[in-house]
Image (cartoon, rainbow, N blue to C red):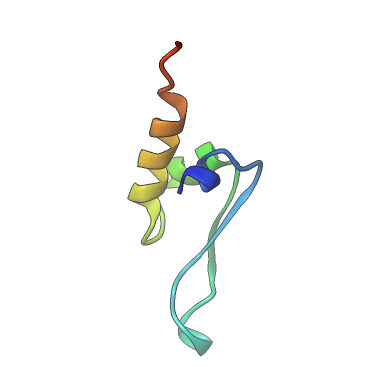
Length: 58
């Protein structure tokens, strides 16, 4: 998820196979996709984005 949090563009697809899966549920910047809160991985994306932006200066 750290890679997703710093990506330029994210496309989130629902899990599943055949007709039951592969539907695009969100697309955009990591912040846009996390804000939508859609999909099975929404909570993980939001947490990864928060962790990626909570960098403590050395």
